[in-house]
Image (cartoon, rainbow over all chains, first blue to last red; front, side):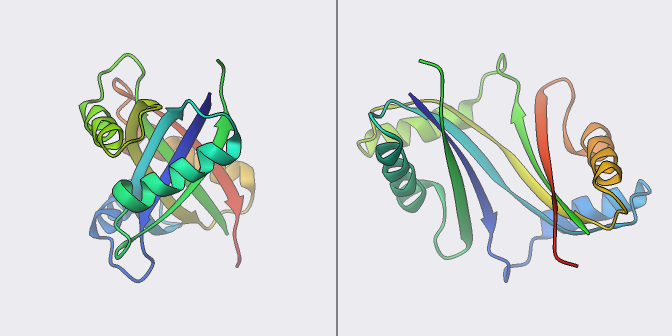
Length: 84
Length: 84
């Protein structure tokens, strides 16, 4: 059994108003040295695969076909071996 | 300059209908060996701190005070040194 941990973020060239809002809130709480806040999605699932390679292929396909919007979003993921 | 990468997820005991929906979509796309899908938020920001310890304290406080809901959500984060 493997676990995929996927981060999906808006591409750098795309404005992130939700990130800006959180950054303003942090600054008004007194954290004035914070910048470049970006918000994205985090998705985690278990994959019953025979190898890490197979789990990687499945995760890559899932990101491309369903989870990420290829025009607006970037994704990165890690695959971990999890307890049976 | 440091970069904080924060993952915020619903606690394990709390139902995640959005995760279930994505899991059903993945299964109907043919990925039948996927289970335990959970969705959360991913937040990233830069911190102009003097040390990794200071950046860690700021990130921890930001999670507790603003970013995560302590009743329903868990958070974990990593701090990386980023280019000046």
